[in-house]
Image 1 (cartoon, rainbow, N blue to C red):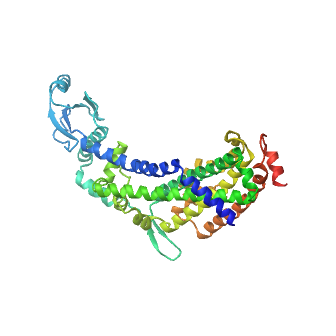
Image 2: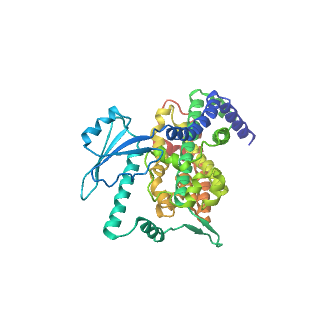
Image 3: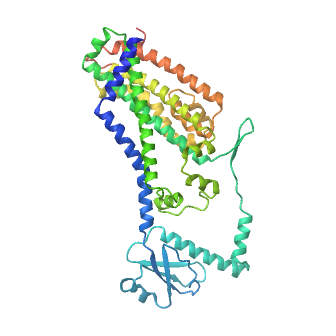
Length: 447
């Protein structure tokens, strides 16, 4: 075990001292914080810099005169006459657009003339106002119903369904399925990229030692199995160190920016609309609880309150599946690295190994849409796909026995992968100048 520890320390210290590790550890949190903060800043600046449109309204029906509501995005001036004359005023007067409402006895038709493109939200807002005014007119003329009476009737007949999850002890918790879905997908994607990134480092480390013939010296004083385990665990510790530093530094940067600019993240819903450049549908975030969720800044508290799974359990499961998912794939990558002489030759062996994880990412939407379905259940049990699939399911709630079975299968499969990889590693690490095949790997396993 002392030799394994020496290999772990050597792998860890060698990698954390590299300039690339230090640069990426500092640069990645800055980039992640920038990805979060920059869209917010741009959206806020866009809202602040939007010009108020001065619109000339020419209504051939004489119905909409003085009925359009002015706001921070538009003011309206009403005139009567030929539209051809008013279009010229776009260039001679201080009008940004001319709205011509064509005379009609049935459907409403209007043309908007402008020299410079108006903000993208302006036209939908204008259409919404015209629709409401026409609808109110039809209510009064056809059904003799006042608009205020209709609004009251609509409010009293509108259904509001609150999703409440009940556990076996009778505890109730408000559930937001869309939040669980997003967090599950994000966790799955993070674990996917980290497993591949760290496993690839193991492959390159094995190839580097094999190419430089350092392995021949190491094998003389340590067993191949111990060398492989030391390398796998050492790289895992490097990956965990970098991952923890990324999270901590990213949080520090975001919190620091929020302290420096307390109003930066205010008005979240409006900024989301501005970023999307389209108004939100009426049924989007229409509940008060959902709006409060978005506007809150204490993310960890919201996760604890609204998720079907506790944040602590989610974090522990994330660490478990990250570690064992990495260990499984790192073992297989180490075996592949020992069987080839160059990274380009490894693709024929890596493709069957990586297909299960890639398939899980391809099926991320069906799994998140139905986290308790048969597809999600089986993929969260198969050790090669469970690190991603189970993380997608977890925020939506997973029975304890399913979680225990999935974790147990992961651990057992890891021992099998280590045994399998060690059989290939002990022979392949000393093989040079030969293009090995699957048949050769099969022979090495049973030697």
